[in-house]
Length: 518
Image (cartoon, rainbow, N blue to C red; front, side, top):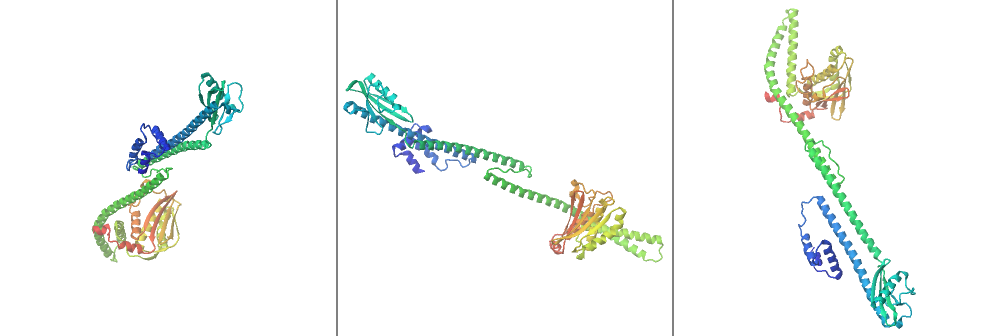
């Protein structure tokens, strides 16, 4: 940078001084090159350009600097051509004046039009009439004008006129040899052989400047458009993470858009996880409340039920009871057992672990539950279809209740003549039971409540069946899910093949809501 300032302050040659004058004139300075250097120097200091400018401001800066450099180069080249041509014309004028003076002083040299010391120089004595020999047609008018003007003024006349692509310099002066004849000398200054090359360079500079302007304008417009699209997308994402993110044509902005899209995906997943955690937390709170209620019910109901059951068993031991009394005792005992199962179901829904697990044939267990439900389903005009086989480590008693709930719900939802399909299959390390029916299903807006305790769409239902099935599946390390596929309702009961996952779950130091309540 300092070296450049020194060059500006102290040009080393006449050509440099000429270029600096043209730069000063172009930039509007009236001082010399040193003053221009003093004006330019502050722009070269570090920090002179602000660091907070936008990219379009920087592009504009590049554009302006490019235009200035191209303009200065063109001005310098044009000025160089002008100075070079002017110097050649001045030299030709001096040579023509010298040649004319020699011809006027020594008329005997003029025997015919002659060539002087300069290549292309011609001269002679002519009175301006007729057509003298050896004069190119393009010179004739200028020579005649200079000769006639010199005769009329009785003085030396110098003409400098354009001829073709160059200049023609002619000098005419009176001579003592003849009162009517006049001495003339002329030379044509032709353009430099490299003029076309330099003209092409100037034209190329102009075209390059135009391309620079167009490219910079396009880049600025593209950058502004892409930035505006990203700003609009960010404003939309502030209220809706599903808003589309544009893909600008500028690669750098496209990378920013990809980064924003990845960030939005992460944020969406985090929000979904937060919503799932909030839903699960709310469910756990509801189950905690249910656990406290169930604990109270288990304490207040099971003890009286056990006492009643014991007395009924003692009464039924009498062999002399009337038949009506025996039937009443049997009916009361079955109702007590039903109430006890209901309390047990509530305890499982609230979080009590199921009983001991043993390896069992799930297809045999499934077929046994279907056989028990077939008479009831036949009355409704519904049949069952069982397929597949699998084995797993489960609590058969609690899993039977889960199977009963799924099969019974499917049969109740099916129209007369329909078939409920139950199939077993193994997927990796897990067993999946699929129960399909062609019922109406659950309204989509209420599907999220399907496994909540006491949720039901049936007037006579308790709303514990699906909640109990999911609780039993989760106690085994599995899950129950609901899907609606076209006109088919699908429930999937998923269980691990062994009790490894359940043992891992049991090793967690968390306790159920019932245990906490008790």
